[in-house]
Image 1 (cartoon, rainbow, N blue to C red):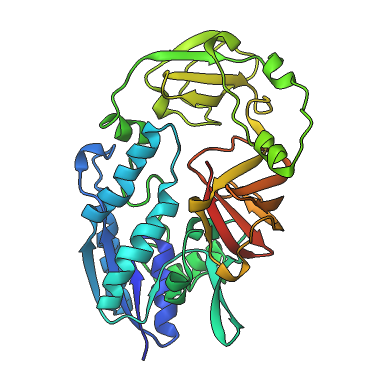
Image 2: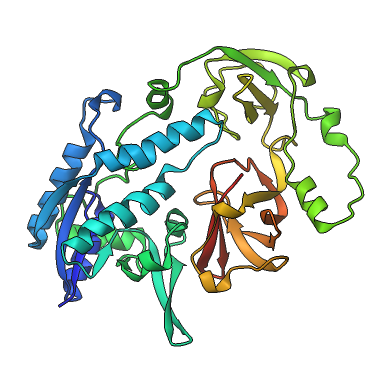
Length: 395
């Protein structure tokens, strides 16, 4: 009998995942990960991880499976929280959920599970796993979940063949309503529980407050750049090579305060991210202001009116070689090769037609249509049909 350890989060998805595995005849053990216990930064008196671990325990009890809690807060702080502060300080916007899966759930947690004699680790993610054979070797595929509304393959875009080989995603074939229905029929305490928001596992944390504890506020100016700014009107140069053209398409516009007008003040450029609309507290514009760039060195936020402001839109992005990750190592592009894919630059974005270009310095992703707020530090993931084959950190 194969042993599976399920990461029980205290939510409905992992509860039903555990039930389905038990039905399929696996020996199932539930494990709750405690990843945080600095209670000074949760924003309510509720203690989310206590509630969650309690719910997870009740579910395990109901399903008749063994249950224990593991404390991973030290690794979580090192690998996720410290990394996030570091990225924000550089003016980038990290994705804690993608990292949490790569570094915690499918690494630290998986090692613990395997030490406990598990054959597999299972989670309540809405995605599926496929297996192909190539030259007599199994190749694992990460496929999107059947529920288009909830597909979470993007969050697993950094997994490796090794990690996938030991993973199971029992609810990937189901839709959210079907999952809730099963939980209701089983009378699980998590059946009607809302989906968790906020940082993966830290609970109800407001990011700026969380960051402010480490990153000191410092006042700076908010500058509005008009969309008719000559910067955007430059003639496209003649290119001598594809490399030149790609570099041009992904270039960063260097703004100066003199390119626009000062419209307000902020408490620290590192708290803001490209495409952000909330929290600027500047009124009186015809269309809402969006952040089009932040300069953490000079502590300036550049903004523009409306979501079609030219400062938000770009056709291409760049991923440096050391940040390129292929789940399907067998499909990895060689120098000067291209690949037609569908890609997304954030969770829940509908897939966009794009072409990958592998050059010497890294990988360029060129979209058919202009993309809004391509953000450094976030992940781009690319798909062939419903299979996520690779990803990278936008640089």
